[in-house]
Image (cartoon, rainbow, N blue to C red):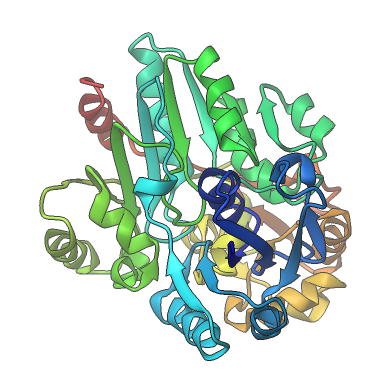
Length: 434
């Protein structure tokens, strides 16, 4: 009899692991996925068109809260963990729940889940979400383009909509994003690459995505999500660590695996790091991965008009995942407000609809507003919240200009950040032998 498996996920790594390891495996029957972290992705089905002929009805996606019932009611033999940016303790609590219900518990490693490419691959990952991967990925693309290489970026999956339509996605223009009706979270990752002139691939089936990307590119840049492992086997593997979250490099899954695997570890945000944090990170890296090269890098922020913040009441809107499951209590917008002498306004009393639920779930966010927008309703609630806050200026600290997707009823200042020039040159030299 086939071994009955449940895959724990969040609409990303879980689907990839199924596609690569289990879809064609007759000795395994995947009876369900579970969902967490992202609102509204449970109570769907992984469609038959993606699941393959062994699953003519597709596969149910259940809420992770129902894990014990799933194990008992579906006679599950094994629970496989398949998502990212959670503490080691979190993983083991799930293992305890699965085992107490009678199932085995396992994780799939990179050897079984990374796809080999015919093209060179540079992978950019991190120990936590919000370390600055996107800025480094853009710098990697720019360095390779300067070598005369034809490069495409492949993003970690964020398939929160119609999974059939999202099997393979190619974005070469802002119009492509509009046509696909992407979420704010997706737009934050894709739009900066497009603004820089790059093509971005994403979707659900990374075997097909890789095959199509290989036809278009000389080099593929894997732009990771959260702190997940690369889906493609890298020729060069970069991992970012964050001095604002000292110690997280060895306390979060699979971020610790990333830093142990990396060829180059980048200590980001050194320009705003707490005193002594960079040196302590160097010591931690030397223990976790003594063979890795280490590069210290600043991520300086630039504001449209910083003087417009001085002495003003400011609402800081920050990257959503960085503040929620990333656990940060500051971002680029916060740094800009502090630098230019503004005063933060607390958005919590003015939160609308689903944004109130975000603050309830993540009370540590404090006086910042996470730009969560996983669907049309949440995007509307975000816009209504911004417009309800009594402030003089809105600082947009997200990777995109929210004014492209929201109507903001007060002056707004955009904050941008890129890898500093000296670090970008060292990175360029490191990539020269690819």
